[in-house]
Figure (cartoon, rainbow, N blue to C red):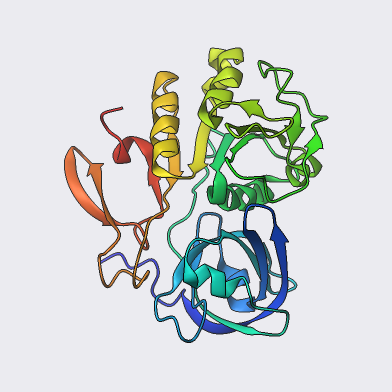
Length: 290
């Protein structure tokens, strides 16, 4: 039996290094977790105990790691008492976590052009993936949010054909990696494309040739409606996708089966656990009818 996670998940008390607050009740938390930082891959996550008095943990995607310095970063938005408690931790505090958990993105060498699409708190896995593609990236990124973005926006310098001139803002961290990015929002955020991030990505894809699209793979993470829209977009251009799902879960290690989703495998509908069978799945298997 395939047990890819056996012996890879650690349970540790990670020390808080830094916590940054951003508009929209969003936080970036840096934790000293050397074992986790050493084995984490883009798309994996940690299951965090927000407070000793709150029994249910929260799954948080890993956004950045430094294996040499032994830290990981997670981005989260406060929704409920658990993450509200986590937002109050300070440098020096200990936060218990399980991780890294899950099967992450698996870049295809035959299709090296990566199209990264992230929505809201689904942005972190794409940032992590982008970091593994640098310093010689063949990637572009499209990020959407209805809250202010958890980073200081800058005017993009790297060109992207087909993009409306009003969509001028980028994520500076990606720009420094040499990865062109553009932002989308329905909230009227300055410098952003006014609409859905999938529509912004479509504008760029339409400007690409068939030969250019033949070496592309779409990698995405975000809320379910966004993932469905991305899969529909990919299907219209016959592009493969790897979709990182966001799902409520209890144990996060495959025991409770509380996070199962239907997946089509070899023509048969199977129930797979988002925590350990995912969270990254083939998009066509998740949404075979699109």
